[in-house]
Length: 515
Image (tube, rainbow, N blue to C red; front, side, top):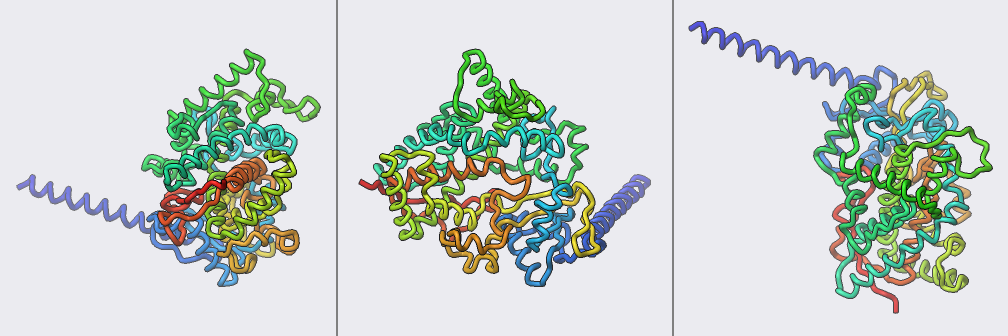
């Protein structure tokens, strides 16, 4: 009998504890979701627990499309900014372009960092330029900036252009067997070869061998997985000092070993054999040995370690191959859907190449003004990264208000939403390269086109990415006609399991060689 009584008491206690925890959880969520109200910031009503991110979490819609919905609703209410929640975490969304200018440029010292996890000791590949903060970011940025000048890009150009031969051969093989092309996959192999060659000085052979080691590890970085999602949520809600204390590792162990070993072996081989190559790796080795890219620079010396070189090569590789491949993919989709634009581009490409004896050169690519418009319109309509994050690093008073953004608050700049805003781009769903002619560009308001971000933290490799995309498109359009295959899902939608803008279900094209 006593056993029954004790069991009943234990059950009652357990129910009481669980009820108490449920009440505490409910109170915590409701209190967290009152943050913007307490701050006096207008906000969209959050759903319990999910905040404003339920559609993203349940993969009903892409990150960029969801924030475009939020942006549009806020703007329709006449707000210049608003508050959102990702689960219980508050996130500030600027709408007004002048406020965006303040955050990204004018008052940059209040919003210097992206807010991502960095631990150079236990997770060395996180110590790259995109993640670095404060003075360390300034130092590395200053040292790397000279590696992306026009002169340095021109120096790397032939290494880049050489990879187009393999690209053409692969497309010819698809046509020969009358097979449809998963163009994103092919272009990812092309950009893997380009960046593997330019960044590491290695022949990756991804175009010839889709299972090459570089392609394998490149895909591994971006492949959605349960473990990766868990890590993402842990990083989002755990203070960074705690993550560092427990030596949390974001990078997959196999990926880390591959990139660290590759960089160390490459540096050792080049230094032992006095090898000079016109590529990114050579410039980084200069920084390692001299603390500068050119002897003439008078900047204070700051020598890069091998781990720091590996981290910069890593981000150059993963950012460069995926975003450029995505840009080319969407550009070819739009060209396939608009045959008149495709033919006009082909005429320009042929005319310019004829001036250079049929050879693709850096100067030839720079002369292709219509190609430039097409790439920019692609980036406008399909920006590879739909938004750029900032963390408030110093308490900030919103101009013209008595409202403050507190230190540590996440800020999201809605790039995708702004570039689809009909106020700035009438009929935004239409693909129109002439939006980027000189007359229209001069009329457009600043901060309405920023596919690479803006301000001091604008993507350092933007010009490289643009050049790589133009080289790939030139190689394809000069030799092939592309059309949309029925296997492509229409209307085109974005994948909901990736932050980077990617076509859902792949993008399938037919290619026909021009004889």
